[in-house]
Every structure is written in C-alpha cells, then in structure tokens.
Image (cartoon, rainbow, N blue to C red):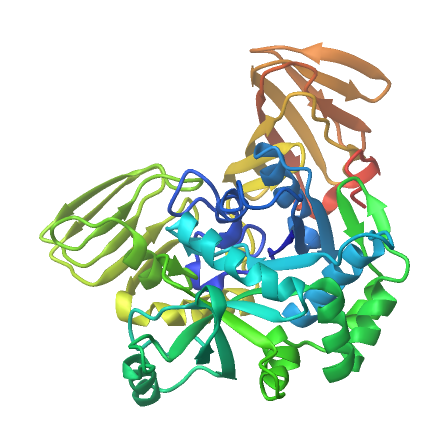
Length: 488
C-alpha cells in the first residue's frame, strides 16, 4: 500500500496565517507537527512504503524539507497547474505503475489529503486496513466520516448494505445539501441504528491499475491528457516534473465527479465505505479550528504555539472567541463570538459566523495588487528563510537565516547594493573575484552589479542582517547565474 498525499490547495479561508506561498497544509495549527507531517505520522506502523506527495511547483521545497524533518525520502510529484484530484491521482497511479515489475502485486494507493485533522489515529488505521482486502481484490474503497452535526459544508455518502469487517456498500455520492436536507441526512438511520449518511472525507483507497481503468472508461479525456503529461517525466533531486503543456490541457475535475459518482450507479457494489469516527476535521475555516482547539471556561480558544504564533493573549469579559497572537500582546475586552488572528503584516477581526467569507477578503487583496494574500513577511527558501523587518523608499532591511551547509545562488542585481552584517555563525562570501569568511560582528559590502554568493560552511545556523539600498528593491531583480536548487 502506497500513500498518495494530496498537498495542493491555497487554504484561503485560514488567511492571514495560510497564504498562497505557505498554505495551511504546511502550518502547525493544532500540534507541533505541520498538517502534512501529521498526515505522514498517522501512517506509522501501518505502511512501510514511502509516500508519494503531489504538490505544485511553488511548494516543492517546503514539502521536501518537512518530509526530511520526519526522516522520509518521499517522491514529490509536481503539478504544473492545479487540475483537481482526478488528474492528480492519475499522475500518481501512472508513476506507481511505471515502477512496477511484471511479477509484483498490483499496488494499492491510499489517497489522503495533507490538511486534515484526525485525532484518533488507531481508529483511522483500523478503518483503512478493513478496506484493504476488498480493495486488493479490485474494489474502490473510501472512508466516510460519521457526522456529528447536520453540516452543509460537506458532500455526503449514502451507505447501503453491511459487508464484512464493518464495511458498507455505497449507494450514491451527493453534493453539499441545504440545511433541511442535511438535517434529514443526520437523523436518518439504517435498520441496525447506524448512520445511513456519512460525510465524504475525500480519502480513498484503490489499486493503481483499477483507478486508471475506471478513468479510461468514464473520463478518457483526463486519462489521455495525464498519459501525455507522464510520457517523459523529468527527475530533479526528489522532484518529478511532468509535461506542462499536456497537463495544462487536462480538464479540471474531482475524483468524485469523474469516477465515484458514475461508478456508484453501476451494478455490483463496486465501492465500499468504512465508517470513521475519529475526531476528523478538514479545518476548512477559523470556526472549524475553534471547534478542535481546547477552550477555557468561557469558550475561548487561544492559539499561541506553532509555526507562526508565539505571542501573548489576555482576555477580559470575552467569550466564544478564537484568538491567535504573533510576537506581540493581543488583548480583548467585552467581546464575544469573534475570530482575531494577528500576524506581522496583517490582522483579521471577524465574526465567527462569517469566517466562510474570509476568501472574499483574500480576493479583494489580490485584486488590489497587494502581496499579503501571497506570502508572509517571513519567506522560506530552500537554503533557509528571510524576514523583511523594515523598508522605505530606497532601502530594505532583512533578517536572513541560512541553514548549515546551505548556499544561496550565485547572483547579481542591476538596481541595488547590499550590506551584510553577520550576527551569529560564519558566512562564506563570494564578492566578485574574492572569496572570504565573515564572522560575528563583521560585515561586507556588495556593490550594484557585482556577482556574489553567500554560503554557510558551519554546523550552526548563520544569522545576518542585510541592508539593501537602491532605486528598485524587488525580488525580481535577482539575476541567478548558478543555483544548486535548480531554480531559474
């Protein structure tokens, strides 16, 4: 069984923590692990195969670093553009089948989203393993979430007759219902008193060859476009690149529409569902994160840990709120039912009842030509990260962190000069024809147009301050001449 982890998506409803360049699947929201890392940790003791992670080009180094931190040597399949789950899974299935010897067993894909919370790992593993025998024999399997409320934000699965191992047949998949229909689904039970309707989790299990056969039958256009895209993949470090033109020509379609819905109408019960009651959430909004976060006696959830939140919170006469602080004190007085999320460059204050519309704010920021929807003030790179701590008309100040052994590209700038001051660690600097070491409390100056490079030759992180000055300070004034990470 090979885990196929879908790590695309922008998570706009969790702005301003989740952004296009650093979406929610790469954040530590409810644990010291990121959501992607929680997904792989959930597989410990269950599968031995390394995961195949599917993500877009922009996030490839984030995925590689987070997998490395957990000791994984995952294959990372890069989508040239988002085309939904049906084509993405097709790429994964073709990649898996291409590496199969003729005498191998047909590989089973366990298809998971990278941004779900599942509190009961044992229940998840038991439900998944219950599906394995039937899936190995050629069935489709899915995990259906036992509903806790008449939710309108999820699709539903209608369960049918009971099978072995607590599995149920699938009668149909239905789209997100209105409130009246959701209430009906929530109360309707089978003869033995179990739920007749389950939430569609988007987690599936299927043999790679069975998936491709079904895709060829129901959506031959998606199959053909995916096949062309995978005809000659390029391998770059951990990354697998497919043909961009062919894949962009592929229709945008989910596995639900492309395969599961038409397959559920076929005779013979080709799809089985394992009911899952394990504290599941897709963390699709701030109110959903409030639901799964520990609360005080007044129903307040306070987030002061994780990747991007390390500030203080003081609450007075406050109830039912979600508050996330970043680096500074956030206080509330006489408010209730609010979401307050503070980051270094953006602050969100919203009614908890309106958080589904945060995506509208993100759209307005994007339309205004601003950058707060795309990335944080602190930006991650394959060599480390930088934080833009101050800027003005002709200057910018950054705090740069370079990982041990890492090296920035050999580059030059047409419009800016740079002054580097080492705070801690040792920098190996190439400045024109000269290469030398710069240690703590020392500095060097890079003139406009000078070819230069920065490297950390030590075993501890290199921390330095960069002061840029010039007529134009944009990131697109980086002319890379040589780069060990394969960037253009």
